[in-house]
Amino acid sequence: MSEDDLNLDNTRGVWFSWFQNIEARILREKARDLRKEESMLGKGWIVVIILCVASIFCLFRFLNAHVEPGLSPRETVCLNEIPTDPKFFKGDLQPHVRKIIEQHGNEEWKACLLTNELHRHLGMLSIVGAKMGVRAREMLEAPFDELEVISFAGYTQPLSCINDGVQVATGASLGRGAITVGQFNQPMVIFVYTDKKVTLKVKPEIMKEIGDIVKEYSKKYTFQSPKYFQELDKVSIETWLKWDRKMIFDEKIG
Image (cartoon, rainbow, N blue to C red; front, side):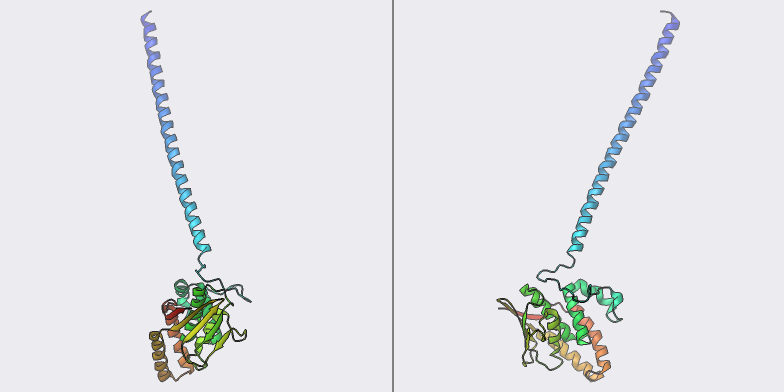
């Protein structure tokens, strides 16, 4: 083999080696890119799974947002729904709407809202009556419109205002003959559903707080004057938000 042939073979070997190195580098880069794509794909699936789980959780929370244990939902008659958007409400109540619903639930919101419309102002005792009716439905797991009620609150204001809230919150109205009102002047009501019974009485400290406010406002503004009701509405919103229906009554089952 001549020297030229040897040089040619060496050159071919160099080129062959160079091409092999280039090919190996390309393959390594492709393998690295493939691993990167697989890693990205894996991470993408993880993100998709997380988003799906989060979406299902949010959907579950949404569907159960208005489900309250022991309380079957109150169905409307003429309205498509009970308003909950603050823009539908007057100035004093407007900033508290969302907080009241969040703190006390939809069923109490409906009961107290409709009680205020029936009662023609926001009254502490009428709102207490609504909370009482909702609490009784909750304890007895009674459907709306299915309770028999005996009220000891009588017919003398302001204690008798309890009766308005109780009727609205339970559906046990005078017109339907489902409520009996006794002249005992006691902040106490008995609720009966099938063979179950619960007695709720407003705690003495709550009655004292209400009594002190009524006395103060009666002296300052004259009992049941327009100014009296105007100022009472404001404090009633505060107590509506503050008083937890599970804490403000002495409860007796049976």
